[in-house]
Every structure is written in C-alpha cells, then in structure tokens.
Length: 222
Image (cartoon, rainbow, N blue to C red; front, side, top):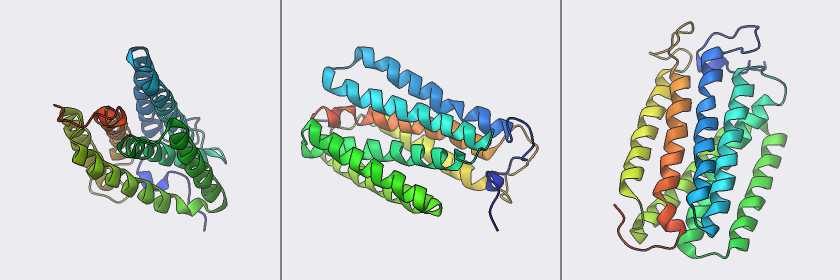
C-alpha cells in the first residue's frame, strides 16, 4: 500500500491548495534563511562567494521542495523535497572537508557535483532510500565537524547555536510525528513545522560556524 504524502507529519491533510497549511507555510523558513545567505555574498571574499551562492540556492530549493511536499503534493514533490534537503547537508560536509584537506576549487566542485548526481539518480530509482542517503550525508557532516574542530577554526558561538537548534528540532520532529506525544493534527502548533524553522536556522548557523575552516584558518575562533 502506497503511503500518503505527509501522513506521518501529524497535520491533517486537506483537499485544498495547501494540503498541510502549517507545515507548508513553515517551509518558507528555508527560503528566508537562503535569502539571508545569498545577501551575505556582498560581504564575502571571492572564493567564499560561490559557496554562499550555492548554499543559499540549495536552502531556497529545499524550502520550495518542502512547500510542494506539504502543499500541492504533486507527483514530483517527494523527490524534490528529499533531494534538495540531502544535497544541502551534503554540500556543507563537502565544502568543510575541502577547506580542511585543501582541495583545489575544481576538485571541490567535481566531488560535490558527482555526489549530487549520484544522489539524484539513487532517489529517482529508489525513492525509499531517502533515510539512508540523509543518514549518510549527516554522518559525513559529523565527520567533517570533528575534523573541523581539530583545526581549531570553528566559530564557537555559531556552532553552539547550531547544535542547540538541531537538538531541539530533532526532539520536536520526533515528538510531533503522527501518534507522537505532541501530535495534534488540527493544532496551529505542529512539531514538524517547528522542525522546518529550527533546522533551517541550524543549517545556517553551522554554515557560518565553519566559514574559517573553508578559508583555511587554523587558529581558535570565538
């Protein structure tokens, strides 16, 4: 039996343009944060601008994919929703590792684009692989974080904000699932909506926390 899109995210699914209004509207948090990152390009050095351009675009795309998933719920919405989020996480991991290892820009982009193409193909052929791919991307991100801390070039305040946001986001994501203790399908408060807002903030904070790593700095950063 095929699962209904969004049925595990608690909020009642209606027949309107926005099947899950709260979850759909909250998805715009990714678009807002993506816009902030794109705006920050004007204050960035040349090599960092391309990172911010792509990361900002991926965040906006993640928001659009999430709106489609919780809103119109068209046939391609699940794929767009899944692939954009996985690639956003994967991108942060790759550029962080690139800064640590000292890859040339061409190598960094070749690695990311190859991984992105493989991810898209796997999701297109095997839609149920989302959790596996997301888990792999998160593990790679954690590994890059450990290596980044070894360089001493992490912006600690941004990093603490990222960790705090993601811990709360995951807790609300789990508790707010269908059948969870915080699930009230008709409520304006949805744990999944909170996940959207907090995870968007966490991704932004972590991206900012690793900026010195990408710049090749190897000293303590407050």
